[in-house]
Length: 422
Image 1 (cartoon, rainbow, N blue to C red):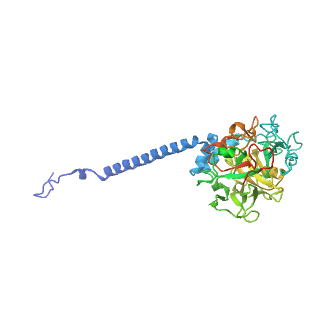
Image 2 (tube, rainbow, N blue to C red):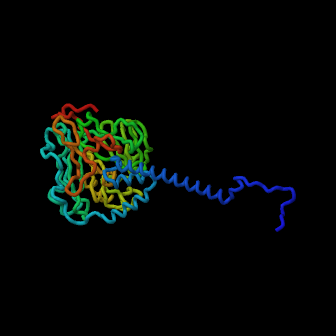
Image 3 (cartoon, one colour):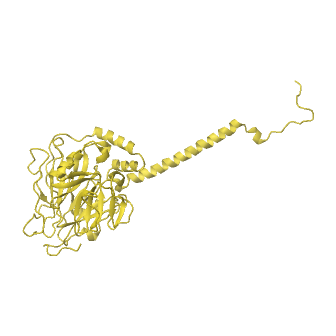
């Protein structure tokens, strides 16, 4: 074959760059890209593992692993996935229908030597009337009020009773606590997670000084992003208050009120705190019209969207008494009806789902502080117990908001002659 190279031109030398063809460069770039993606995935997996691991060991995320995973998932944009998993679990574990409550379900926990209303308590509110059970006929002790918690100036500052939630889920009991504002002073404690921010004047744990007069403590409302409302405390708006939303208001004198913001309750110099959560359940002594058991947009997302779960609510009576209701297998309509039957003229929903519904009351000896050792949970039967226990509010890690009720009189007071200053 003839040499086609022009005369006098020597062969061109090939350097390293010339030897790297485009296909070779593409393969190297592709490998680097894949390595980068793998590195990012490894970092993400490690971060997820650490983040989820911390959540699963964090008691402020709930008492159960299920609740902790759910809190972590919803905080990281996995709300839909978490709800689907919960829905599947609850589909396999629906609340029981029919049956009877276990023995002792209508009896208050703790001491039985507590005094009732007597002539030595001239300033106390009268004992409330028996609550009509949603189920007919009622059990013998169903709806009957029993004195509970620390006596205040030798008077009963709170009573508790129990009813069944409805005529379908008849093996469950719902706890109701009645609190006398003439003997008790309310305080809203704010958490680092709910509402977030801070520091706050009152935040967990309950101090030794406050424990000397502590009578009860109980959960507040939803996470702020789910509450459809705002939050005010320590002379500042933590989250904007929304007109018309159900609002629990604490005043300087330690009393509480519930109402629609902007009309029934408003900002005045006497307001200490405002906690909003959804819309009113009871108004003018009646269950509000339009309540829908399956309306999660207005009444909150339950575990898996299930209607019958642990719920709690709070309201006030015509004479100012403060009512807490909490327990299992409650629909939003059943909760509203029990609040109304307990005498509330206005009432709202507080928190829901098993890890967050907790009402604890304390029975220390005269002159001694409240503690986990002398505390009891409102609902504590052989088959159903409020989670978290009475020690929850004494823990530094408790990061949600809650309410306390403290005696207006010293821990060793035996009369109403010397109330504590406000």
